[in-house]
Each structure stands twice: as structure tokens, then as C-alpha cells.
Image (cartoon, rainbow, N blue to C red; front, side, top):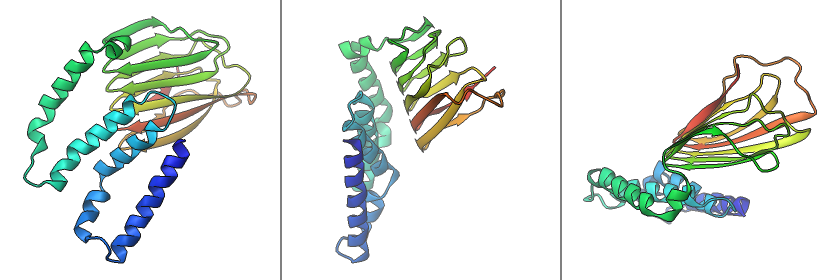
Length: 227
């Protein structure tokens, strides 16, 4: 569903540009419809069509809308309400059951995985975990206003290609991997980034074992390390 939502937004953007060029829409609207705030809203809408956690999408839409209001209503100054709104939202999250399920605070220890898969979510929280599974198959790590450090140096990749999806929204992920792993990084970032900063990489990694990292960062990021 995500690709259809993305395709629809791209088509809508093209139609809007065509309308502006044909002078069918007021040119003064262009700086609103084609702005970084609207980009955040668009990314949030696309993420809502996925099967994974929808919270990052709602946060992106809320942040984009919050900063878009002054562009539409010039007499409204949202900067004065930014921190009060953040504090109120944080309080609501603390009180909600869903927030407690995401373990507010810092988690440390050995990460549990199901059949070699990671499924880690940090919302206004952090974690520092070590995974020792000998048939690691990827998984997903999501950090929203939080961070995660995952040590995979004692883990082993299962044969074949495996995907590890990283979603970072105002947050970050640090991966520590063995030097002999073959990693393919696919980066998709908006005002953020995820990079491969391994200091040690073996020249001839096992070609039958590949880890594909799909990093999606919005106002966040992270890095891959090795020792």
C-alpha cells in the first residue's frame, strides 16, 4: 500500500506544479504546498499505509502541521506554544498504556529475538542491547524521539539475504556488527542520515550471507560500526 500512497502523492505534486505553471492556482500558495513542513506531512501520510506501527506517521503529520500553521495564518505564532504542546503530549504518552508498553527509560541487557529476528520499538526511550543469535535474519528497529544501540558482534548471519529495517524519527540507531559481514546499505533520509562508519571491514566477506539495511531517517540518523 505504501507504494500506491507514494505514487498518488507524486502525481498530486505534479498536478499542482502544472496548475501553478498554468496560473490556475494562486502563486502565493506554492511556498505552502511545496515546503519542508508539507514534506513531513506527506511522509507521515505514506507511512500510515504500511502495516507497521503508525505512531511515527502521526508524529510527522503533527509536527509538519504545527509548523505549517504560521505559513497559512500569519497572525498565529506557534513558536510560543511549541514547548507547552511538547510537554502536554509527553505527559499524555506517559499516562497512556501504549507508552508504558514501550518501556519509558533506558533498557539494557541481552536482546531477545524470535527465530533470529529483531523487533525493537523505542518511543521517548532508549535501549542498549546485545544480540547473540547464531541465525540472525534481520527485523525492524523503530526509534521515535529515542535511540537504540545494538551490539551484533556475537551474532552470526543466517545463509541468504536478510533485511533489517531502521525507522528513525527524531531519533537514532547505532549498530555494531562483525567485521566479516557483507552489508548493503539503502538510505532514505529527510533532514537526517545513516552512514556506514566501520573502521574494520574484511576484504572477502561470505557472499552467501548478506544483510540489507534499509534506513529511513527523518530528523534523525545513526551509523554502523565495527571493532
